[in-house]
Length: 123
Image (cartoon, rainbow, N blue to C red):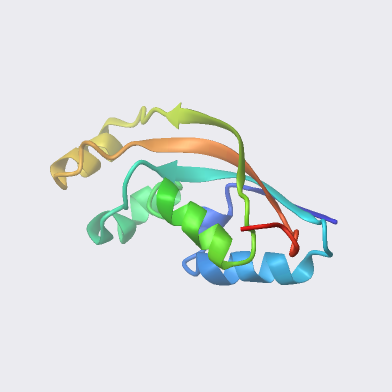
């Protein structure tokens, strides 16, 4: 079994439910292989509610560490990073929205992960 996703989970407000559902649907040994947008810190609520940033797939970005913990809580004991790359914001208005919110140090990354359903994996 494999579930493939490309930049969709960050658009889901209940990421916990998405990951739990993927884990439930996979057979033992199955894999969730997906690329998504992540951030170097938590995206503040003011930016999470910005419609333009939502449309740019930035508002729903998960903080790296929160993602790791969430994946483990949902049953994926050993999240594997395949590759990552910084996302440069080319739109001046989008960057200004981030900067003017006082969060100009917020960085975004595109990353691909492999999450395996391996219930007997040691913690």
